[in-house]
Every structure is written in C-alpha cells, then in structure tokens.
Length: 345
Ligand SMILES: Cc1cc2nc3c(=O)[nH]c(=O)nc-3n(C[C@H](O)[C@H](O)[C@H](O)COP(=O)(O)OP(=O)(O)OC[C@H]3O[C@@H](n4cnc5c(N)ncnc54)[C@H](O)[C@@H]3O)c2cc1C
Image: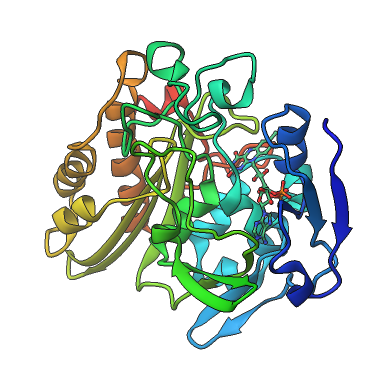
C-alpha cells in the first residue's frame, strides 16, 4: 500500500470538500488500496460523523450514509415497508462484512472485474483510460450484458442498489458549495467511452443520506442467483414489485443486478407488465422486453436465459406475496438460488 495522509473528520462540513477518498467501513477502499488500484493521496475517515440514523421522512425513510448494511436490513421500517431492500442487503456479502459496510460505501463500491482489480493486467479502460479492455477478449463470464460498450463490460456489483433503484431512491450529496439531491438511477453512469467516470459525485462531495420515497403498493421481492450458496456476488438478480388488482397489473417495478454496467431499472419490462393480466405469459413477455437490448459475449450469453428465468420467478414470487430472498452466509430461508437451481426455473 502506498503512503497516504489520514484525516479524521469531526463534522460533516469539515468532511465535505476534502480531497481524496472517504473512509467508511473500509471493506472496499482498503482492499483496493492494497491492490494498488486506488491510490488516494488523502483518506478522510468519516466514521465519527452523525450519519447513521434511519428515520421516517415524510411518507418515506431517510437512511444515513453511515448506517451499516446490517442495521438497515434489520430496521423495522425497512423490513415492513421495503422488503426487497432488506432481502437484497441480506443476500449481499457476509454477516461480518454487513456489520462493517456502510450504505454510502455500498452504492459507491467498484466493479469486481478481474482486469480492473489486478494491476498486472495492463488493459483496463476503467482503471487506465485508453488502455483497452482485457475482459472483452478475455475472461468475461461474470461481466455485464446490459449497458455495455466496446470500451467496458464491467458489472456493477451492488445488490442493494438494485432494490434502491426499484424504490426510486435518491442520494443527498453534501459538497463544499452546499447540498444537492440526485436520483440513484441518474447517479450511476453508463461506461460509453469513459468507463472511468462511474458516477455523478463531484470532487469533495460526500453522500450524507439515501432517501426512499413511499414504497409502491403491493409486494416487493429480491431474487439473487449466484455461483454458490455462500456469500457471493450475483450472476443475475431481480428486484420486482407488483400492484395487482382483480388479476390485472396496475403498476410494476423491475430492476436487475448481476447483468448491468449500472443497477439496471427496466422500463421496458415495466411497460410490458402494466395493464396486463398477472400471468406467467405476461411475466415471460416482460422478461423478453427487459433483455431485448442485451449484448452478451461468448462466455456470458448464458445470462440471457438465466435472467429471463430470474425475472419470471421474481414476478411470480411478488404475485404470490412471497419473499423470494436469496440469502447466502448460512441464512438461507430455503429460497436462495445457486446458478444451477436458477437455470431450472
Ligand atoms: C468478500 C466480500 C463480499 C462482498 N459481497 C457483496 C455482495 O454479495 N453484494 C454486494 O452488494 N456487496 C458485496 N460486497 C461489497 C460490500 O457491500 C462493500 O464493500 C461495502 O458496502 C462498502 O461499504 P464500506 O462502508 O466498507 O465502504 P468503504 O470501503 O469505506 O468505501 C468504499 C468507497 O465508497 C466511498 N465512500 C464511502 N462512504 C462514502 C460517502 N458517505 N460519501 C462518498 N463516498 C463514500 C469511499 O471513498 C470508497 O471509494 C462484498 C465485499 C466483500 C469484501
């Protein structure tokens, strides 16, 4: 690890505007610094800031950026109103990591692409703009199939962000010039020809809160399929919310993980569901609509049929009022799916 200046912030205003990187749980940042991927000249420790509250805000809930994944998953307001977020959090990482890892750090986590994380690979446009993409011609089994470009196919790894975009979450950002609010959907950027620009966070800006508006009517689920039942990132996942009345879908939300270069909300799937009968055939049509724009490579073409099945299963679970959670870490409710099980849907 390279030498860096360590600053401990005691007030939010003191943290906002600091150069370099903020240190929250450290479960991503320290790893990447050890790997020499992140090389901040300064690290500002924000763990002492009063940003861990989870509280009602209007009809919704405000989650402080330093609330841990575990605290949010276990909070009664989240469990009662935002079950897909709870399930996404419990399906992510291990209990130890969830205890340390913050929500702000979760939405800011970087891709697990091996060409990004291993500096012995010289070609990574995300790490070194203009150096090429090792994954496209190399190992891309776990990479994205939606939102990719010829410069980058790196996957966005956050489970929680998938549920958060389905719930229309926004971030409160505090910079040296004051506060602004941005939707999480707009916050994460597509790679295009500039994959090193991952989000709309300006120099010195601090995420202070994640804001959830009132949840949509109906049931919400998060289904995650991964290579193994223990803690593991998603091969494919789906946050699904359905409001069904008299057998007809009045409103739907669909967001995908494990397949997008950013947490992937699918307006195409939602349009294919709205106003239609709540049947498996409708759900299959929605899955086709969600994946019509997929651009898989040779090794990850399996993610297209896999994700279609994940979407259908998540929607069936939402319809049935089931949780459909995909816990790892020995917390399985029996509904977590490994890749093989997911493929038999
Ligand atoms: C073994 C392992 C397995 C994992 N599995 C999963 C998984 O299955 N699903 C999943 O979703 N995640 C998984 N994760 C990722 C984990 O969720 C993240 O590492 C964690 O959420 C990051 O939070 P943190 O507080 O530790 O962030 P840090 O490591 O402290 O920071 C991460 C980044 O966010 C920035 N940052 C942190 N807080 C703020 C803020 N308030 N404002 C602005 N920038 C900020 C930091 O500067 C840094 O760039 C896994 C991690 C590990 C190590």
